[in-house]
Structures are given as C-alpha cells and as structure tokens.
Image 1: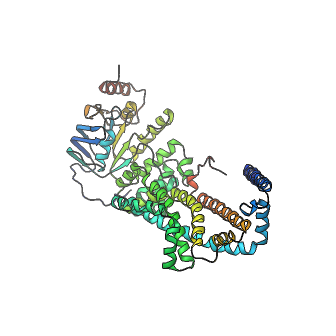
Image 2: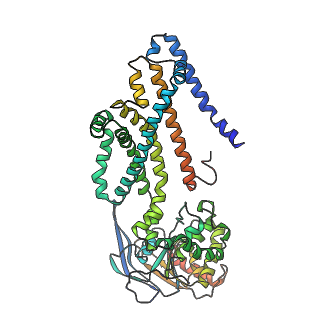
Length: 254
Length: 260
C-alpha cells in the first residue's frame, strides 16, 4: 500500500526485522562520560511488536536512535530494516494542517503537495480525523495530535516503526483509548514495532514481547513473552500477572 | 463592536501623548520666546506642519523611498547571511565579528566614503539604511534557525530528507517569525540611518530638511520633520505586524492570546 522509499542498502539479516547485539554506547558530557547502553541486545522479527520498558534515563531513546540509524554504536552491532521514528513529543509542524503534517514524510522525499494529500486523505478518514484535515495542530486535541504524528511515521513507508513513549504526554483516559486504537491499527497494518515506554501495562497490552531494561547503563534484564491473543483486556488475569512480572524485573514492585 | 474595542485600546496612548504635549507646551511658554528657537512649542510645530506641508511631503517621499528600499535590501542580505551562518560554523566564526563591528562604525565615518563611491543619489543612502538595519535581522534570523528542535531534524533524517529539504520544510518556516521580529527592530534604526545618510551629501529628504532648518533658526520645521519620521516609523512597524499576522497566522495562538 505504501511504497518504501529507495534507501541505501543496509546490513540486514532478517528482512523487516531488527537485531541489536551487545551494543554499547556512551556520551561525553561536560560532567564526564555517561554510558547510556552497555552490552544491550534486542531482537524483533518481522511484524513483531517489541516493547522496551525501563527506568527513566536508561538509554531507551538512544536505543531507538541506534535502530533508526541516527547514531552509531561504540561497540556491538545494530542491523535493522529502514525505520521511521515517532518522537516522544508529537513535534507536529505548527504551520501545517493535519493532512500536510501527516504527509510530511512523503514531502521529505520529494512527493508534491497534492500527491501527498491524496495519499494521506484516506488515512485521516480511517483514523477518524476526516473533519480535521485542514486544522492546525494547535487546535487538535492531544489524542488527535498523536494520531497525526503516528500517521506521519506510518506514511514514511518504513518496515520498522520506532515509537518513543508515544502516549506519555496524554491523560490517563486518552492514553488507554490510544493504546486500544494503536492495537487495532497494527492488527490491520502489521509493522515491526519497537515501542519504548515507561508504562508496563501499555507494554503488556500492546507487545508480543516485553524487554525490561536496567537503570543506566541500560541492558536487558528480563524478556517476557506475551502470547495472549489481541485485543487484550487490562483486567485479564494473564495481563495482570505479566504486568507484575515486568514490575518485579524492574525492581519496582515493593 | 470589534472596531470600537480597537478604538478604545488606543485611548491610553492618546491620553499619554496629549499629556506630554501639554507639559511640553507649558514648559516652552514658561521659558520665554528665545527658548523656542532651541525647542519650539507644539503649536509652532503644528503651524510648521501646515505651512511647510508641501516641502515636508516631498521630502518625506524621498526619505520613505530610501528607508523602504534599504530595509528590503537589509532583509535580503540579512536572511542570506543568516542561512550561510546557520549552515557553516566556519563562516559563522569568520563573519560574525565583522557583522558586529559593522554596527560600531558611526554612519558619519562611512557616509562620505559612500558618497565618494556612489555619488549623491539615492544609492548611498540606501546602503547606509541597509547597513544599520541588516544586523538585527541577521541576529534574530540566525537565532530562529538555531532554535529549531534538534529532534525535528532527527525525525526528518529518518524520513530520508536531504539537508535542503529539511531546511525548506522545517527550518525556514520556523525561522520566519524571527525574521519579522528582526525587521521590526530594523524599522526604527533604519529611519535614523536615513537621516544621517542625508546629512552627508544630499539636497532632499527629511534629514536634509532637519540639517538646513537648524542654522536658519527654523527649529519648528526641524521638529515637524522629526514628527513625520516618528509617525513613519510607527506606521512601518504596524504594517509589519499586520503583514506578519497575515503571513504567519499559526504563530498567533488560535485561542486569541495575541488577538488584537
């Protein structure tokens, strides 16, 4: 449905998947060296949703930037199909309407404005935003902005979506709605998804596997498979149990 | 209703101006007739505005042309320089000290040189106006370009956008409000620039009127010319604000926090 743009060939084992192997990455700051990731590994197969949870500052955003090719690891290997980022804040362009924001990725690779709108319009309708095509972000609700932001990432046409705490800024009720919405979208538009979140319940509700990271320097401390069929219910005994397991792994259950 | 509210908003400024004019009138009257050769009273200025209206009007047209073309040149040069500075850290380090230094050179020093090079026509005045007003545009536009969210640049990179595409779709529109802000600051200094440019080598314009009125003891005419300059600066400023609102409606909150 969406054509992947031509991109420089990238080393890749599993098509459309992500392999992060024993990756370390640090930064030099004015206060000294900070190790963000230390021998972190992660695997996502094609069309798998992998959630990454961890305490604040454990290098989750660094991990996504490595997967998107925005940074290179100091050690270890990152092999990933082309990935598009959905940043933590929606970062919609305030001067563009919803439809033009949604089509930004198309415009970025040289598609004309009318053509980009033609591609984006049916999606806005699918996402329940057809009445807001020409509305600027400042006049959209938080949930609508996240939907436009997600659509923008989806229309980039990349096999991998790197979602950086996509619903963290929303109120609790909208967040739950958006989680249900995202599960639906991914059911009909399967993609390989790396979902970074600090919300353990969100991870268990949406992911096929949950990776629990340690505090900085981040590495995998637990991997929890979620085989439950989707859509899932928050109150499902298995969901509750897996949530507890993930929280225990985080060391936050006490 | 809206127009009435707009008129009401002008009331405080009108009261303040009238009060200042009243104090000024009273002060000059108390000082006696000789003093009014140095500082004319408001009613003398008003008389000059009426009697010298044709001279003031034709002079205004000359100065207005210099200012408008000068600001236009300043915007073009300033925007170009800020893009160059934004893209090249080396050129930033190379040019910024010179750009700052250009503002420290008094107009009186370089205006004669410009007259020597470019003659006594409009061109040297235009250059002076451009030199004094491009600085604020360079500084604000560069700051605007630098202030673009780095995460937005990263996002564009994951969309395979070229550097130029990112500039066109993200950085340039983000910086436009800053360019307007710079142009608004430039308006006030550009008028002063035009006056000083006319002090050196000209026979027309409001600056020239001020220059020749003082030795002829026509202080009222000089102040009248100044009044017109001030009104012109206010009008330009308001025009720019209006243009900004029309061109960049998104920069003004939809909930009306900036609404007039």
